[in-house]
Length: 259
Ligand code: ZN
Ligand code: FE
Image (cartoon, rainbow, N blue to C red; front, side, top):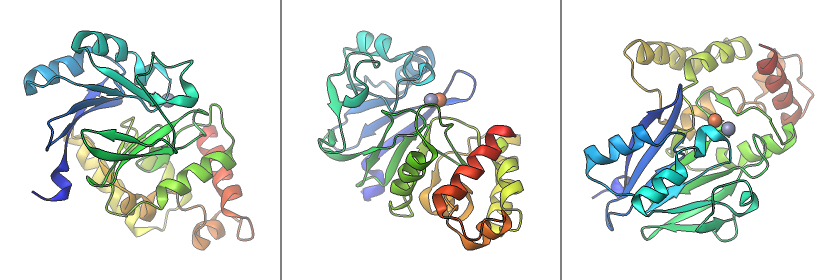
C-alpha cells in the first residue's frame, strides 16, 4: 500500500458551501471527522460507510465548522480535538493541541500548524505520511480566509508556513469558494497561465457539480495570488515592486474584501 493510501478521505458537503471530511487511518481503521459544521450529512455518510468516528477534529471555533461536533461526539462516543489556545470557545476538548504537543491519529503523526489570522486560535492539521493538510479557513484553493481576528502580517506568516509543505501535499479546506476566488485571482494575476488554466478547470468542475477540492500546495503556489505575494511579476502588476511580500499580501486581501 502506498503511503498516500495511509489515510482514506471522504469529502462531505455541509451547510451552503462548507466541507466536512471523514478520515480513516487504513492501518488501525481509526475514523475521524474534520470540521462538522452540521451533523446530519456527516451521520448519513458515516452510516453509508459503516464507520464510527473516534475523533472529531476542529480547525477553529466558527459555527460553520463546529456546530455538529457535540452531537457527533455524543452519538458516537467520540473525542474532540482542537486548539488548546481556543479551548474556551470550542466544545470541551479531549485533545487540546498546540504546535509543540503535535498530535497522533490512529498511530499517524499529525503536525499541528498554528495559523492565526482568520481567527487567533486557528490551527491546520498536517498528516505527513498521507501527504494531506486540513487547512480550515486559512488556505482556500485560490484564496485565503478573511482576517476576522488576526493581522495581515500574521496571516501572511501563517500562509508562509503552509507554503513550505511538500508541493504534492493535498489540501482539504473548509469551503467550496474556488470559482468565486478564481474570478478575483484573475484580476490580480491575469497573465498567469497556470491560473488561467486552473480557472477554466474550476468552471468545468462546478458545471459538472464536482468539488474543486482537494488542491495541492504545488498547485496553489503556482496559482493562488495570496501565496504569490512575494512574486516579482505579481508585485510589479500591482505597482508594488519595492514592497515586501507581507505588504503585497495585505493589499491583495484589502482588494478582495472590497470586491
Ligand atoms: Zn471560519
Ligand atoms: Fe468557515
